[in-house]
Image (tube, rainbow, N blue to C red):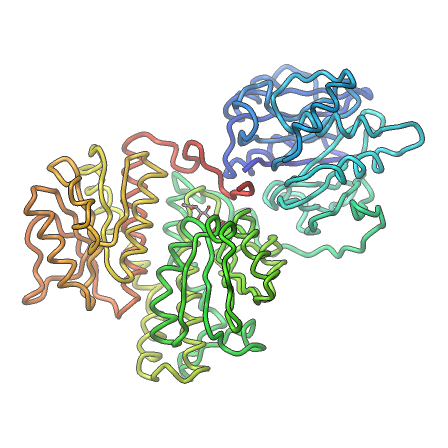
Length: 610
Ligand code: F6R
């Protein structure tokens, strides 16, 4: 969703802000803009489409003297992605400029009020209403900080904001409520931004802002206040250890491809410090203080939801914990009942997904303890959960989630082992097989990746011209089927349905014809014979078939269609080999069709609106 950067310091601010916006491009956007202060005047330049178009507009403008500026990439919510609706927005009388990520829910009511006072608007956005509300608050004797806070106290909804005024040419104001915003603390310069990469080349010292906080930065100072009381708040900067290299393409054509290939490393990093192979022990100190839960309610969205579904049988079979998995946007509006002893496990790569965060708050209101499984340190979910376990996958930049899923699967599997041992429901032999297999996975997967990519390219060339396709699986292959369909849809815009293979006969099989392939995820597990029957049913109706499976054994040969053979793996671990195959298939299909792989249309990396 929208990206924000604000800067005040000693460097030319506009080029710096443009570089920062490029590092936030992964968030997804459809227009962009910058505002800078020069000769005590605000200058706003905006463009529809990609940042290159904004750069073209800036070329030839004298911007090098300005050392205070802010920039924005917009993911449209109110009003079409036009230049008029792009941020920054100036107030009616030109005294203020603002950029905004989020939604002001009561903007229409506030707009009517301002219209009655003669304020005129040039966009359809809620943001332009907000900047005028701040200007409206600016009464003689009040500081801009007070006016800003006053307007925010009356605004309902979600926001990360940055604000400039020509009267304070070396100051950036910012505020946060339910949308990500950070402070970067430099030497003779300070930053605000939606995410760390925006300013990482200049500083590693970061203050994570909380909801309800407002900030004032100058080149040499930074202060944080409560929006409600304007009392100064004490905040401690944290040092970021990872570098920009980790958030760059590193020779790969796309971030997505790089992140798919990073999975062996992500799996190894997730295990590191948590697995002791000699002593056959799993340690997750974050969980030590509580008993294993009596029930588990997993709540998440999209790919993170698929991770929860994948882990459900492990929680039940190994740890004996009855588990339900729910989509956060449904959970939050159905007055769900959580039972005593239940633990809510919210899964989110970004830690900022609005629906998942709302579900977390609902669970806490019901007195249910919340465990967060997140990838981003300092994210809202990581901070609001009672306990948090980090996936350690490193920054995921591509909009389509890939390495986050394998790392979530590793941690969830380790949690099931950990609770299984704690409750004594797990036998030592299963623990041994799981840990040995897991430890061998990174090397096994690393050597497999090139051939997976070749095969994915071949399969994509054969099937990417189809009008639609199925992804089918049973048991733990069902969530992988959902994930395959999600990836194909979001990247190549081919209609793909993820289905439980056993459910096919209850309607969906009507879609099968020679133009509608079915991608079966059929490892040699206990359900293989069942999947094989479903596959044969499809083949018998002239439906093309791809089967992701293991080397044929007597009695386990598949008839009909193309088999994509992967090495055998123990039990649930086969999912870690099958997953990159489906990811690469969707990546190659989208590339062949000429789609924008890292920034698919209409999508945003972290979905901070509901
Ligand atoms: C799909 C994808 C999304 C996210 C979903 C949840 O490739 O990226 O479906 O998985 O928006 O995001 P997080 O995990 O950040 O809560």
